[in-house]
Length: 208
Image (cartoon, rainbow, N blue to C red; front, side, top):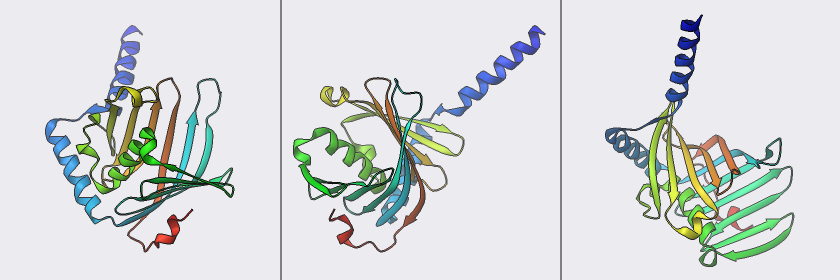
């Protein structure tokens, strides 16, 4: 009986460790190259997303959904459609917000956090994110996925974001999940699905 329990523990432990393993230097180089090759071909990208906001004091995550649209070099829009209409556009150094018809704008230059998050998300599509000297980056692999974890070096940013995780599909070498871990136990997880690459997208989409 003890032997069976020991084998079961080893089996479970083995599966847990198998879920996420650190990449070798060769695997990191290959992963970066794959992402860069694919990203250079991407001129536009639109994808549905589901966002889960985990807050430690809530028993259930807050779920919202919508669409993300990107157009090179740095036009980006997040459209929240359920359970409310809310959109954020990153354009020309500004963040344009439309909250149920109530519009406002924020200069990215005055918002270090938004600016860096935007740079990282845009970089994940453009292939420029791995060279960011503002983050300590570590690389992991799991079944069918590669994971890049970004820890901010800046003390101010670290107060708000403990770590950013980008999960890539191994075959497509594109981002399938973004996870923002806050300084507390709270985090935001965004799952991307139904990607459409290089469809024609007019600039008017990003007017907000």
